[in-house]
Amino acid sequence: MSPEFEVKLEDIRPLTTHEFDQFRRLAYDTAGISLQTGKEQLVSARLSKKMRELRIRSYEEYYRFVTRDTTGQALITLIDALTTNHTSFFREAAHFEFLRTNILPALRGRERISIWCAASSTGEEPYSMVFSILDELGMEALPRLNILATDISTRVLAVAQRGAYTAERFRDFPPQQLRRYLLRGEGKWRDWYMVRKEIRAVVRFERLNLMDQFSHATPFPVIFCRNVMIYFDRQTQESLVNRLANVLEPGGHLFIGHAESLNGLKQPLQYVRPAIYIKPRPGSGILSKGFSRA
Ligand SMILES: C[S@@+](CC[C@H](N)C(=O)[O-])C[C@H]1O[C@@H](n2cnc3c(N)ncnc32)[C@H](O)[C@@H]1O
Image (cartoon, rainbow, N blue to C red):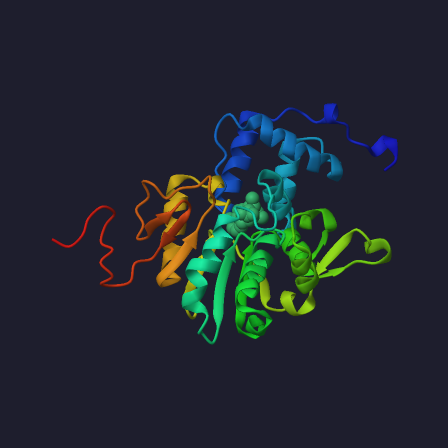
C-alpha cells in the first residue's frame, strides 16, 4: 500500500459510546455475542485492525460498511474479530476419552454414527472426534461415520474443509496416529500435515449461526458445543441449550466447554460430569438432580 493511503492507528477517531452501542447491538442481534460495558477498549482495538486494512478512519463509517454489505462477509469478519477461533486437536482431552470409553460402546452396533460439532472453528475438534472413534472402532467404521461440523464463520470453515495444519499442531500425536490419519506435506508444504481425504469425507462442514432456528431429521446421540457459550448471555445460553436438547436423542450427551456451565439455566439436561450433560430417557428414573421416585 502506498504510504499516502495508509491509515495509521492515530488517524482513527476514538470509539464513542454511541458507536460502541451500535456494534454491541449488531453483534448481539446477529450472533448472540454479548459485549458488556467495559469492553470498549477491546472492541476498539480489535476493530481498528480491520479498519486499517480497509482504510476506514471512523467507527461510524466502518459500522455503515458492515451493515450495508449485502454479501454478509463484512459481518462475518466483524464477528471473527470480536470472538476467538482458538481451538486445538484433542482440546479438553477428557471429553474425547469419555466419548471413546463411555459412549462408543453403545453406538458401535449402529448403522450410522451421527455427531454434531457446533461451533467447530477450524476443524481440529471434529477431526479429533473422528480420530477417537477410529482409534476405538478401527478404520472399517469409517463409512458409518457422519459428522456434521458447523460454525458461523465461513473463513474458519474454509480452513477446516481444507484440513491442512502446520506440523506443530500435531506435536503430541503418537507416530501411528499420524501415519493412519494424516498425509505429510512435501516441497513448500514440508512443515504441514493434511487430514486424509477419506477422513475429511465423513465430516460435513456447513455454515450455521446458532442463533438461527435449526432442526435435524434424526436426533443426535452426541453434540459438542464447546467454548462458544462464553460469548452469550444467560438468556441466550438457556434458549440455545433448550434448542440443542430438542435435537439430542433421549440418552444422548451434550458436551460444553470446561469454562462453561449450565448451572441456573432452565433446561432439561442432567449433569454427568464436568461439562458433560445427558438428556434423560423417558422413565429413566433421572427425575431431578438429587431426587428419586418416592
Ligand atoms: C473459541 S472457538 C471454539 C472452537 C471449538 N468448539 C473448541 O472448543 O475448540 C468459538 C467458535 O464459535 C464460533 N461462533 C461464535 N458465535 C457463533 C454463533 N452465533 N453461531 C455459530 N458459531 C459461532 C466462532 O466463529 C468460533 O469459531
